[in-house]
Image (tube, rainbow, N blue to C red; front, side, top):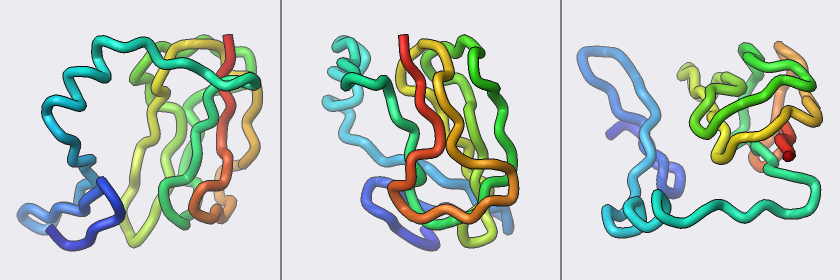
Length: 112
């Protein structure tokens, strides 16, 4: 483990870095059984840490499924793919490729 941010860990194996999320096994099982409730305005995909937008895999109006890769940000020389937590339609993209983002900046909004 090279670095830690809350539940996320940077793991390096043979010189290759990956970002992983560590979650309690029981909590993970419960998450799979409970439907995600959305706030008014839909799901907001936020930057987990400061970084730079490398690529955006969706466009406004696209339909995405749970787990669909939406956007890639680079932080600390690692690329991190952010995924949709619930299916829906992309309502808003608030950043562009190459933009610098801060932790908790809203990047993409997905609604019904």
